[in-house]
Image (cartoon, rainbow, N blue to C red):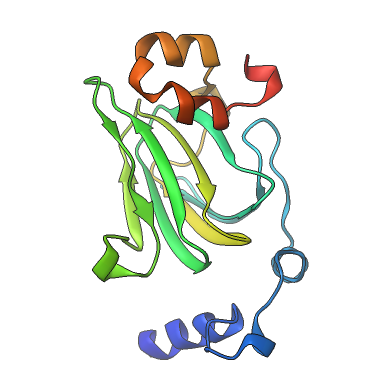
Length: 173
């Protein structure tokens, strides 16, 4: 049953190999009821929330991105469809990672990514659009969200300056 559900989701998102079946980001936004996500960017809707955890759908398009931010809890990312997503992760220990969330396993992409609490993260689609989901446990709390400033992040991680500058918004400067 789970495999059937995955295949159905795969087809819904236009990944059948038939170009005529490919959905647009606007169509996905309408079907899933996505709305603009303030501060971080992208489109989103909450899909589940209780006292133990929360989950969302999150859509990035070529003209938008997930702005550099960090959370006070680990965030689990899942790739659902569309193009791969390039991440910039600035770790608490000073290391920098650039994983790619996507379905092409032989090229190093992975359909799942865990971003540990306190890690600065930002991401962008590699194409027209990417539909992903995130899961948090305990559930999301806005008090645990911090938007990164370009000055602070470049000071702490100068070797990632050029990528950081592409993942901040004007109000983050």
